Image (cartoon, rainbow, N blue to C red; front, side, top):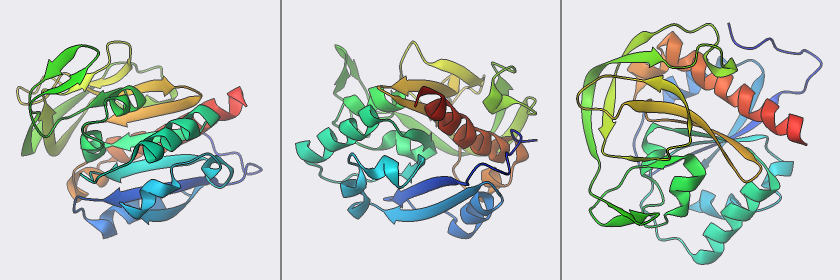
Length: 235
């Protein structure tokens, strides 16, 4: 069961960001619609990039990133994104969003990890080669922290999903999921904090086969709840 909903608490306001990668929209929105304590709006890249600026936190409690857009971005746009996170907004980064903002190493520090479309990207003095992916893999998800609010009510489970490997993952992330799949990095979901913004990131979530998996759906719901609750505690 997801974290207990407080009926006196207003619904969590989510901005769902997509674009640059196809997905099963009907199944994704069915998953989001099942979260009865959440209301959401959609915004498509690249237009959505200009929404990442201070003031967005007054309209939305949480950004759910599900885009993978290889767009040109300006320093002003990335500076505004950082300023928004410094103000404080909950951030949930799903699956192919870890491929976003290639060439801007700060995004790896925002999400706690990043995949790369080509060789040569550098983060903190380490140069990375192209990240890897493989579709329709049977991935055993192991819960690394069963006491965390995001993993409550979820035991180890199996998903049919895309595997990612050769990614950058910050050594200080709080690990929630791991896997021993040979085509995947070991750490596949974590929590993190950037400036004043609580962050949840997972490598998983490619298509409808995953969205309908109770372990995945519950985790995303509880990640939205947890990041927002952490932000409210701080504020």
